[in-house]
Figure 1 (cartoon, rainbow, N blue to C red):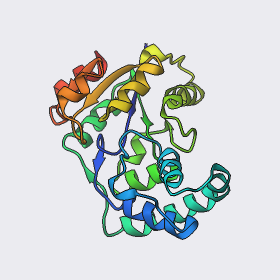
Figure 2 (figure 1 turned 180 degrees about the vertical axis):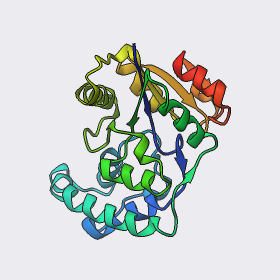
Figure 3 (figure 1 turned 30 degrees about the horizontal axis):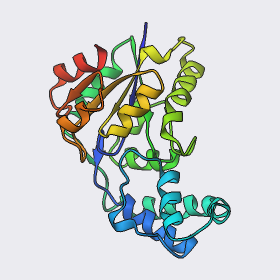
Figure 4 (figure 1 turned 60 degrees about the vertical axis):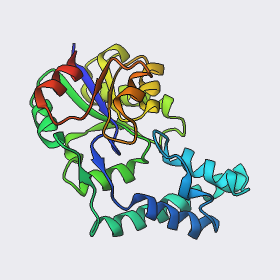
Amino acid sequence: MKRLLLFDIDGTLVWGGPAKGAFELAMESVFGTAGPIGGHDFSGKTDPQIARELLHLAGISDAEIDAGFHRLWEAYLQELEARLVDRPMTVLPGVPGLLQRLEGMPDVALGLLTGNIIEGARLKLDSVGLMDYFEVGGYGSDSEMRVDLPAVAIRRANETWGSGFLPSSAVVIGDTPRDVACGKHGGTKTVAVATGHHDTETLAAEGPDQVLADLSDLEVSIRALLA
């Protein structure tokens, strides 16, 4: 049975970059406000979910939000692309070697499971040369609710490779409690990596199948992902 590995992006594969600033500018240009963005928790959420939460807190209705979303994502992607030229993402330790090794395994398929809208994901990973590893994924542009995304990614894997992927053959890899909850809701295995804002103890409390401090040890990481 082939294993489908579904990686989160921010805090799992890469770190930093200009996305939050680009997001704030786009929100202000389209809606006139970014809401209380400074202290807002982004971790493990989809881009549309974050935007809706912030705009609700600013008193903007769902009807207004829905009407402006198309313009918001256009503005955000324009701002993000321009800023990534000078501020590309930072690749986290061990990631390039791990992806290269996994790509060469005949029984492993690689995908994304991320709250980023699809074009945002591409821009971020292209800025550091990682996007070519991933043919399929589930994205924030597919659903505002992250728990919906494993099914989307698995469906796309089956459409792309025709290999009969099931939730039980998939693994969600992420750095937040919401990543773990998302995978468990979708019936997949889960591997939590403490390379974001959450330590190993916090992640372990969510009950993932495996917890790693980071992905820097190639053999340890592969064993955890394929267990």
